Length: 416
Image 1 (cartoon, one colour):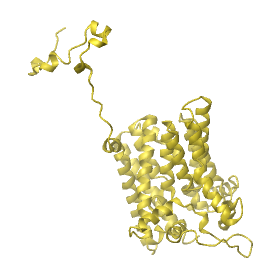
Image 2 (image 1 turned 90 degrees about the horizontal axis):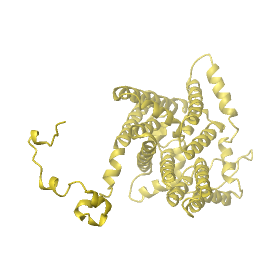
Image 3 (image 1 turned 45 degrees about the horizontal axis):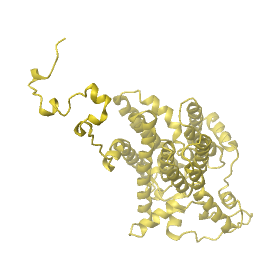
Image 4 (image 1 turned 180 degrees about the horizontal axis):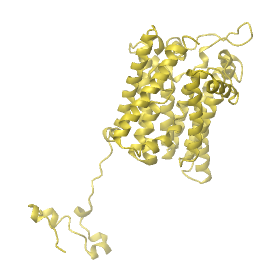
């Protein structure tokens, strides 16, 4: 067999080919001390912010692009309904967050004539409005600050989801995981003054820290998640189970204990603050009665879904019922998909909370948004498609989702 030494292509071996990079002799293998330092020197470059962020840029860029697209759809439907789109940016729950950002928790706890507490800002967790208030210190108005916090938190969430998906099944799945979450049926809140994007950012990076057994970071991030939304309780259970597994296996010394103890501080601390303000241990849950919210094990959800599926005419209730059924199917699918245990625990509990809550059937999709684990089977499936197919499927899904969310905001909430 002819030996191709590169001469035919005009390549001339240099001094380095002949000397520094010559193969080691058997004697050198047996006697490492005889190896010249120049033969073994290898320079390892430390990762920079640019090299760490660069792989996630497609996921973050698509997240921003689809949010702009969805906001445009909201704008068009609002204009068609004769309503200013700006009305929805800080409307509904967003109005409460903005109130906390501007005034704090100054509202007294009062009761209505029926003995049920009146709607109170204490029901809304403090981290998101606190970040909005920080931007107000540099002169940014509350509504603009809320949109900035939402956008930046969403980018952080997309980055974290990309890392989770990449570590699970590669770059393509990582990008799809972030994108599918960003165009979910409840994703309208990702470009409004809502805290879901901030919660998912903390959840995603907490699960990244768990997978890398960085227990102190895990506990810190989970604690911040607990200051963001009550749904962080699902994350705390996932972190606790992961810590127990590590402790049983005698891994990482005292660190799993520390992570498990740090994780609930945010949620428990805020619930304790509400308990003091209300004079009740169950203060936060008691305040939820003002919105007629409780956990009824899914009774309200299934009654509404059945009515939507059996109605003579289609409506937003029918679409929402299909979303609920789709979520159940995806949840069953995730149980058949190999994923880390903390993901499964977090996703399952989040779905149970979303579907087990009473009142406001139109919010089911929004409550399901933090359950990004539901998109993992879809990401694994879509990763097999060529880019040309994805270039059609993803924008089409984004448009349908944007229309559904904008329709609920611009039509249903105006005419409940």
